[in-house]
Length: 174
Image 1: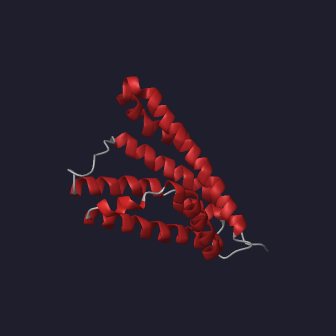
Image 2: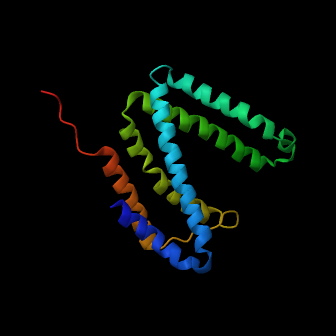
Image 3: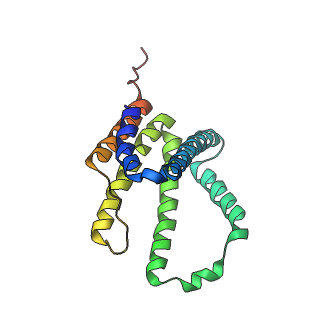
């Protein structure tokens, strides 16, 4: 189901690309690397939760990232942000804190496969919200042109991911 969904989703995209297919395939490869990185991150965090609380794990991750990225930061650029840009920045910061905090808490209480089943819905939600935002403010956001087949393919990928993550129902021990 995953393979059929991926094929269906990307078929119309690949046909529309023509000469730029090599650039597109590089992007698809990066998506694969991102998926692998996410899997490693989730498994590593699940192991860390055996020694630390979810808040402790998040503190280590955010502090570590802050230390790594401070040398590349340009704080002076904050002065040039418009009120709209400040709003978007603050929303993204809050969204990151809440989302990763919820992810850490979910990993602390659920099996990793159950958490990944919930995360499988993220791509569809992203596509749906992108469509809504594009309709609300088309002058500020570029429209992603997805065919009906692409939407069906995306749904198949998510459904296949859910089936893979959830597997068969566990029977209680007798």
